[in-house]
Image (cartoon, rainbow, N blue to C red; front, side, top):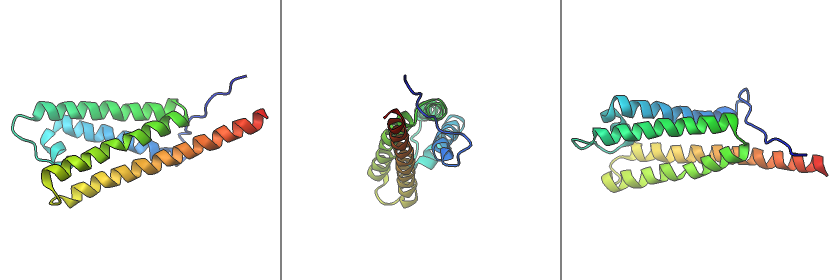
Length: 144
C-alpha cells in the first residue's frame, strides 16, 4: 500500500513561510514588467538605456517562478518544496555577486536585501525539509 506525501497545510502559519517568497517573486515580477526602471532600482544595479526588454523578460520569469513555488507549496510534497527552496538560494547568492561586481560595497542596502532573501529561503527550506523528514519517520513507524 502506498502512502500519499503530505502537502503543506494552508492553514498552518509555517506554510506562509513558503508561500511568501512565491508571492514576493510575483510582486517583484509585476514591478519589473510594469516599471522596469523601478525593478532595476530595487535589484540594485542601474538599468542601461535600451535594457527595458531584458528587464521585462526578467519580470516575466520572476512571475512564473513565483507561481511555480506557489503551485509546489500547495500541490506537491514537502520534500519537493523543500528541495526547490534550497536550490532557490542560488538566486540571491548570484544576485549578491552581481550587485557586488557592479557596485562594490557602495550599495550595502541592496547587498543586505539579497542576503536577507537568501537567509529567508534557507530557513524556509530547512523548515520544510525537517517537516518532510518527520513525515517520513511517521510513515516508517506506521508501516513497521
